[in-house]
Image (cartoon, rainbow, N blue to C red; front, side, top):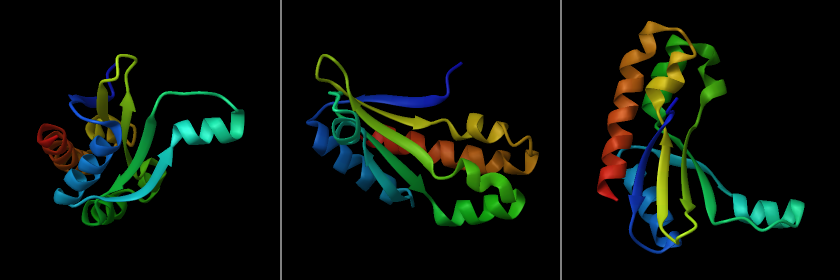
Length: 128
């Protein structure tokens, strides 16, 4: 089962992260958290890992609307976008598929929000 929208992106890892954050901003998303998985694993586990960042993206207006329809929706927020390095040095940006994510709520009133977020994430990925 596919649960993400993905795009392979040319460029240096940190530059791709910056471009992704900027593109999310252009679509109305703020990045509420930025988790450096590589640094966390090194610090907490003394383990090496590829470059991997988890960006917790949130569009306040859409989150407000969604929470108005389904108060438990907060357990699924923010929507995660990950940027990671492949073994060959290429960089992938991957966003959760919001329509699939919102399906777990079983609330038809959220369908248009999932579609809207999905359209915005597609534009973010296409712009990279």
